[in-house]
Every structure is written in C-alpha cells, then in structure tokens.
Image (cartoon, rainbow, N blue to C red; front, side):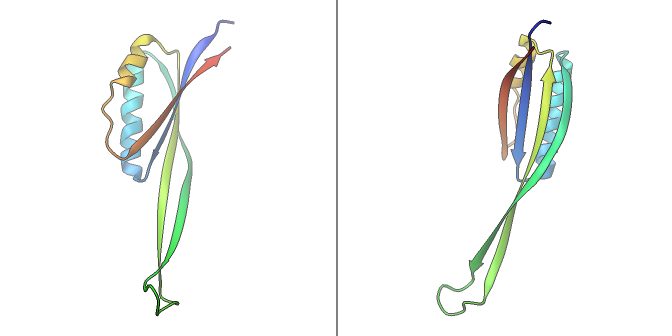
Length: 107
C-alpha cells in the first residue's frame, strides 16, 4: 500500500451558525479541488458555567449565572494534492472561528 496524506480540520466557535457556514465553505473548497471529504462530524458542545455575585459585599445570596457554549466540528480530507492545500490556506474565514489543521500520514 502507498502512503497517502490526510488532513484533519477541527473547527471551534461560540456561534453555531458561523461554524456551519465555515464548514460548508471548507467542504466546497476541498471538493472543488478533487479531494474526498468526510464530515462534518459534530463533536460534543463544551458548556462552561460561571456564577458571580451581583453585589460586592452586602447581598451574598444575590447572584447571576452565565454560560459559554463552545461548538466544534471535525472534517477529514483524503486524497490531498498541492492544489487542495493551497486553496485551503487562502480561505477567508469569518471572525470568531478557531481552526486547527493537522497533516496525518495514512499507510
């Protein structure tokens, strides 16, 4: 068997609409260059909750609660060529999206 390259893209964002638009853009770009795309795979949403006192000193029982939800998606791209890598690196992505790209060797 020949070794082939594989790209794994992990996308994180606080807004689920923005992350869906970004995954759609990445998939369209990869398919246009002839690569095979698997995904997007929705990963579990990470929820962080914070409790803060409303008053600094007097009213101890008065509190506010906040939460931040981090949505994430996973995309695997196989049969990658130099044209695919170039087009993915030149993408203009919206603000508020974090992308982690890993190159994997498949045997």
